[in-house]
Length: 192
Image (cartoon, rainbow, N blue to C red):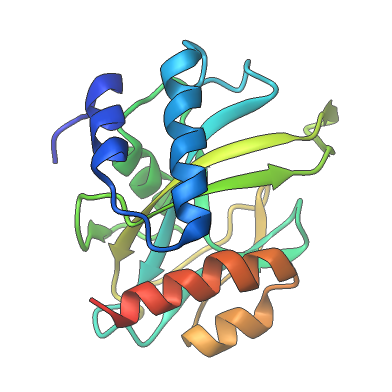
């Protein structure tokens, strides 16, 4: 794996072929925001900032790893803030290791798997109010052994589990994610 700088990431986003209209529109938004805002990779940009997510599958693609996210009160994918990093694949891998305790994670591909502009409602984190904002998200398809031990990260989640793709859709209580994100990711995995 090689680290990507800002321009290499912009080039990769520009070359990305959107899967649907949502990705087409979000691709343009993400590209323009990164291009126009030096602080796009920092939470200091309180309007929108870059995040990286992992769609975690097992080797035969029969299971998806999810965490029960404390802020959203829902089962969800894994991921987190770039916090100044532009190598978003490394961010996604690090977040999986931190959030689920899995040691052996590998990318199915080093290429972007999907793009999303995600709304985040205002919430309290570490006793501080965080205003509503956007996560400009780059998703990577990652793989791990579903038999490897997992563990929760108590300050972020209260559950970690492998589900079939159908169970993952049923477990999430966020309708927009189920319809627009997780359903799309499941369909994209089927096409690999």
